[in-house]
Length: 212
Image (cartoon, rainbow, N blue to C red; front, side, top):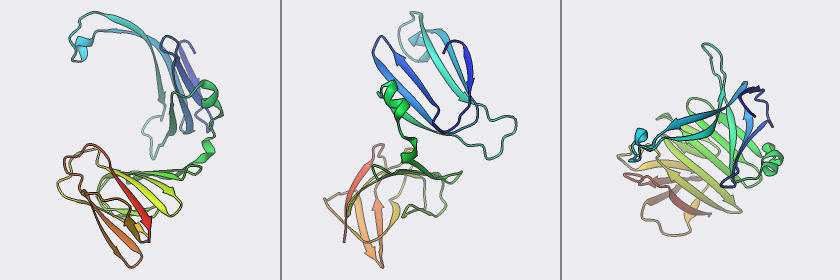
């Protein structure tokens, strides 16, 4: 692509960028979005302009992709898969049907990789919501990986604003596979309540669980 090009954002459309100098590749596979505009442009600037020390002016080619939602859009949505270090052929042949959008609204975004049995959820607010067998009542990011009768949870608070223990609840009864000082479990009536200490933690807390 050179200059500006508009492409339909239909499922299966892909955008691929290759840096021939570094031999690095990144692909984007579209799941759902309006018309996409792709713009290839040259930009000039120095590291000092963004907080660095060097004042030397550099010029490089960039690509910009954006979705046109129109004027005063209502409930406009978009979804895509980022495929870093995939070859263009791998990006083209990536089966986007493996990815299921469970829910995508102002309260929660949830997707499932059906082939690898991985579910990713972002709870945006403080509303009580249950989705994919997980209940949360505060902003939190969760990645759930299922392996037979075991579950691995990666739990984080990207805002890093948590002042108290974060509470989530799982459908089913589970025990800890390995000791974790940041985690407390309470199992009762077919549910597992998990208290996670995310205070001042920018990284994820990984919880290994086994079904009882």
